[in-house]
Amino acid sequence: MQSKARTSGPQPSGSHPARVDLNGSKDQAQNLSGRKAEPSGSVKGHWLNFARVWLNLAGRSLSRLVGRSRATVARPAAAEIDPLLSFASETQTAQGGLKEAARIAPKTRFGLGWALLVLAAIAVVASIGMIAVTQLPQIRFPGLAVKDARVSIETRPPAAQVLIDGQLRGTTPIVLLMKPGAHTMVVRSGLDERMVPLTVAAGAEVAQYFEMKAPEPVVVAGRMSVVTDPAGAHVSIDGRPVGISPVTAVELTAAQHKVTVTSETGSAERTVTVDAGATTSVVFSLPKVVAPFAGWLAVSAPFDVQIMEGTDVIGSGGASKVMLAAGRHEVLLVNRTLEYEETRKIDVTPGKVTSVRVEPPRAMLSANARPWADVWVDGTSVGQTPISNLAVAIGTHQVLFRHPQLGERRESVVVNAKGPNRVAADFSK
Image: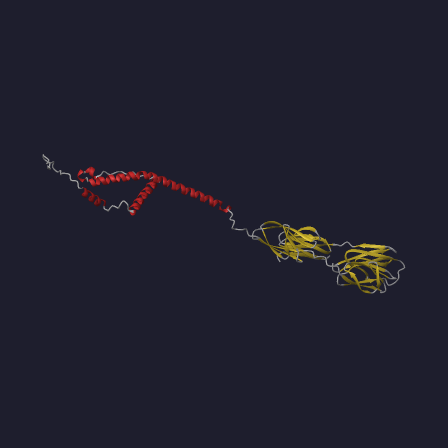
């Protein structure tokens, strides 16, 4: 039998029996929260919670890193002010919030460590980047090859052999690709050889030109004609009699030959050069009367001269020997091409040879080159262009111009006694 206990005594005014409705507390908590709780197993709720936690950690970490900390002062709960406003559901919610804060608080310290770790990683990556930037100019990429230099070589005459660093690369004209750096180039044509040190840069274009000595021609025959005034003299060539003057079309090798003519009134001797495939004519003037006493005049000169007495040509050539009557003579030595004239007075002794040697006068020679060159005259170095008023003997001279990158040029110049005498080479052509 059930009995109901009834409270005796008066109840305090303003107080009511406490009534707890579990279902009502749950509904009230849901209403106070203002939202419907997500299911604990929901994926959406899980990621929202994860985002809130990491946002909270980031905010706290940044505040600590910049030195800005804020103290959070807890406000007194409404239930502590007025017990009438105390609800069991709010107590449970407050306790749940404390538990959540307690669960998150340790992770805040953990989040700060991660923030510091991320900053340290950024600093390491930045340092590596700075090192890479400073070392990048020293890095060589195998795929980027150095461009070869282009060297073109020409010679006159062509077909000269070209050797680079001791290796035969072909014959001129030729264009070669060469590695940048220092090389030794040899150009060879017959017995003529040139060795030139050559330094080329990557991608450069260099032109070389050489004047080579022409190979010796094959010895072929030429012809000679000998005329005397008066006619009827005996003619000998290299000591071998060839007939009575005038003598025409004597076939000889292309070389120098000694011609001697002899008559009752006198004799003469001369050295004559015979050119291949051509006919060389020689004229001798002999005394027209028999001299009771006679001797000889021998003239030696580095170039051809005519020996004149009065208006008569009594001899010519670089080496001449003519018969003259004994006594004093005045002869004129002439070379029209070199504008050379010289008068000599001689005494001819009967039966003897009087020798006359011609010393060529000196004249001024000027040489220049574009852009510039070292200069050799007849194999002797005379300096670097421009060269002016260089004293040389009159006659034909060989001038060599040499540029270390542009090659060589050879020029033949005839220096006369009156001038002006100039020679030049243009390496830009």
